[in-house]
Structure formats: C-alpha cells, structure tokens
Image 1 (spheres, rainbow, N blue to C red):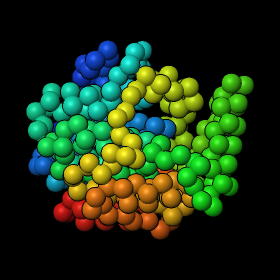
Image 2 (spheres, rainbow, N blue to C red; image 1 turned 90 degrees about the vertical axis):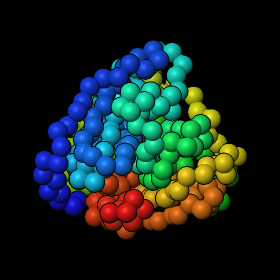
Image 3 (cartoon, rainbow, N blue to C red; image 1 turned 180 degrees about the horizontal axis):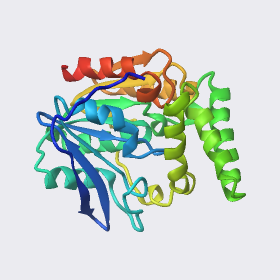
Length: 279
C-alpha cells in the first residue's frame, strides 16, 4: 500500500445530513474540484482513509456512509441511494463532482449519472458491474460463480450460528486475498463492524436502482472501470462487460489487486485515478 504523507491541507468538516427517512454521515476535506468517494457494500467510508487525505491536496473530497453501514442510520422504508447523494451534494453546495465508487456502490454512481448527467464530471467504477449481469450469461465461469455463491452461503450460516469471526474470515478470503498485516487487520475489523448489514441486507433490501445493462449506453460522463487481477473471475468478467456497455469507457486490470483494490494495489490505483482526474 502506498504510504501517503498528506499533511494538513484544510480542516476536515463532518456531520450528519438528513435524507428521506433517515440520516447519513459524511466528511469533507480539501479545496478544488469536488470528488465523491463511495465505499462498497462490505465496508464503510473508512475504506478511503488513505485516499481521503491524499486526494484532499487537490480536491474538495467528500466521503460518506451509505444507509445501514458505518455511522449512517439503517433504512426502514424504500429509498434511493442516488437521491441521498443528491441531497448530500446540495447541502454542501456542490453543483458538479467526479465520483469514485467501489463494488456494488457503482450502481449508486451510475444511477446518479443517469438521473443528473449535468452533475457528474468523471466516474471511476472499481470492481463494479456484478449486479448488472445474470450468471446464465457467463461462458466458462461456472466455478467462479459457484465459489461466490458457496462463500456467501457459508458466511450466512456462520452468522446464523453466531460464529461471526468465521463469517468475516470467509469474506476476507473471498475479497481480501491480497491484503496482509495492519491493512488486512483494519479491513477485517471494518467488515466485522458492518457484518449485520452485509449478511442481512436490512437497509439494502429497501434500496431501488434504475441502472441496468440496457441503459448503460445512456451514461454520458467520462468513465474508467478498474478491477484487480486477483479478484473473483466473475467480477473481472462483469467489470469488463460494464466497460463495454458504457460509451467510451476505459478499462484496466491492476496487477496484484484483489477486490479491496485501493488497499491491495494502492500505488497502481492512485496512478490510474490520477491519470483520469489529472494529477
């Protein structure tokens, strides 16, 4: 992982924003063009600890916890993640932003880009696209699909049996095979603290999305799709399909990266992000 030396480029603002039927936690730091960081469905905004500090050198950098994860309240009724993002940006006075979205949260970014194309500068979608394509479309990836399904079945059973550490380890083996030492420990703890939502989808079950493989062609912002070479082959495949479906999208597989791509391939991740965003 790249060792960042961010310094103190501006004071950090943080707090809660009221959204439809709940509240979400956010943090803002830096000055310059606006950049939003959206974490995955198995983590929270702490996923971006290193990038948040580093990127605030050149950007007004915004990160937040989606419903039911981190410090944001769980959802109890139907809601839209893209509407939450709209409310957050409006409350911060942000008219237009670039977005880096991780894994399943790529759907949030793509929904937002479809609904408010004038408000999105660039999108970087990291390990995303899995929910866009059905397994029966996959040619030659039956084992990868089976591995994903088997892992989620085992971790759910462990959770029901109150063996939560086993559930976390299953997730880490599945998505964090390239992590070690303190970075792995930090990711492990973050996953465990969010395990209830990860396993039960209590909040996510109330979310609705409009993005699908049929309207990918309607995305007009500049897009980069990134995935790690050590990620599950199904996720690599679906990420490639995602890039193929979005007009003009670029695609890159980063060496030595797992699903926690910014943690396992930090240097290459920052380089790829910098190439698109211009730093």
